[in-house]
Every structure is written in C-alpha cells, then in structure tokens.
Image (cartoon, rainbow, N blue to C red; front, side):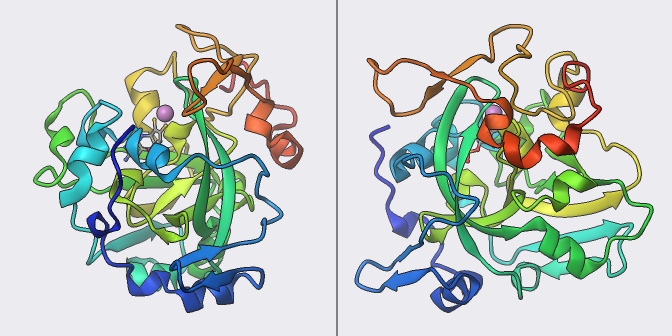
Length: 301
Ligand SMILES: Nc1nc2c(c(=O)[nH]1)N[C@H]1C(S)=C(S)[C@@H](COP(=O)(O)O)O[C@H]1N2
Ligand SMILES: [Mo]
C-alpha cells in the first residue's frame, strides 16, 4: 500500500504510446505538458466514479506469473522484458501473422476509459485505462465467417516470471471470449493507465479489459490472439470448473461456492467504509445484457 511507484521503474514511454497518438485518438484529450500527463474528458463509456489511486492500482494486483501475493507483482515484475514484444494473431483470420506491438496498435484510436473493475475475490477498484477497442484490431486482421470465439495467451517466460515455476497452473495463462463479447465496444486492449504506459504488474505492454466480467477474464501481457470455432480452454475454468465459469459475468445473484458475490470491498476505501452492493454485470447491464438474452446466467456462469 505504501509503495511509491517511481516512473523510472517503468519502461520509458514507448513510441506506441506517444502523446500525439493519444490526442489524435480522442478529440477531447488535452495534454498538460508540465505534468507530462494526459487528461481526458469522460469517454461515453467511462464511469464517473472516482478512480483508485495509482499506488492502489499498481500495488495490489493479481498476476500469478509473479506470485500469488497481492504485492508480489509490484515486487517481482520489474525484470520483465516488454520491448521487443510481438503478438501472434492466428486461427480463423484473413491476415494471420506475428505482429510487432507497434503494428498491433497502429491506427487504433487510443482513449481513456475509466472502468469499474471487480475481481471474483470480491474486491473492486476503478481504473483509468488507456486503450483501444479490441473490435478495431479484429476488423483489421479480418475475422473469417466460421470464427465464434477469441482465445488469448499470456507470455510464457519462466526466466522472467518466477511464478511460472509453480505447477499449480498449466502455463501459459489463457483466457477467451465469445466473438460478440470480443466485438463489444466496452472490450478493450489496454496499453496504459493514468495516462502512462502500462506498469508491468498490471499487464504490460498490452492486456485485455472486459469490465462486466470478473477480473480473471482480463488477461495480462498478451502474446497470442486466436480466432477459433470452439469455446477455448481458460485457466481458472480448467483449474476449478465448478467455481469459475467461462462466462464469468459479474452477477450478485450467483454466489461463488465459497463466498457471496452480492457485495464487494472497494480497495482503498478505508476500514470504516462499508461494503458496496455488487451490480449486475458490474454496472454495465444496460450495455451488455442483450448479449445474453435467452441464456440462463446461473447455468452459463
Ligand atoms: N496473465 C495473467 N493475467 C491475469 C491474472 C494472472 O494471474 N495472470 N490475474 C487476473 C485477475 S484474477 C485479476 S483480478 C486481474 C487483476 O488485474 P490488476 O492487477 O491490473 O488489477 O488480472 C487478471 N489477469
Ligand atoms: Mo481476480
């Protein structure tokens, strides 16, 4: 909690996150050069809830590649090499290939999205991400008609990711979305937060953010995106299918077998603050409920 993040800990802001590109991405963004910060007017998709502090967002993490403790990622992720970085895009796509990170981001409008973030462990935060819609990238690489799901993989590099020596998880970390979920405008690939390049403990250099789903769906440090026709295997579902479903939509009415999902603890709220009610689809019900019409969310959890 008290760890102060020195921006020198973080890779110098790379080419793909330059101010010009950010400003070009959103007319509402205005640079304040003195602070070296990007300030953005609220995106129509942003919550007006107050964001957590940078210290909270970068000091309390789940990133099992660096250990299972909440402070392990901040402590151990500093040695992760994030440049060069390539993302393999394959499967049912028109233009498969190994894309350099700069090429993945090229032409995609970066914007600030202030999202609510709800972990399946019943803590939550509000995070000002910088990113772009996954739909933009998928449109660019060309999704073939038979594709129904998108599968994602995190980097496998045990030399730099000490947690990968644990046999508890079958590495690499994997996640997946149905194609309509992946194409939803709320689904972003994030390359930064608080107007700066993504800190390593938060999934540098590029990670998924799906704000209406439990946090484990938002896979970090992505090296592979595959378009497939079957529901792909996903890490937490492989480990404990009774506890973690593929859909993992935030749902206060469907409890985890070992704890209630009806309420949550906002990280940093202080010991006297009460728990908050958890909202259906984490507060994004109006935007995403139609994706699941006709689906029994207690069965398809
Ligand atoms: N590769 C990878 N991605 C991951 C995880 C992980 O352990 N490894 N943890 C997930 C979980 S459980 C959560 S709650 C979020 C945490 O994101 P944050 O640390 O940026 O808050 O990352 C998700 N993405
Ligand atoms: Mo989580």
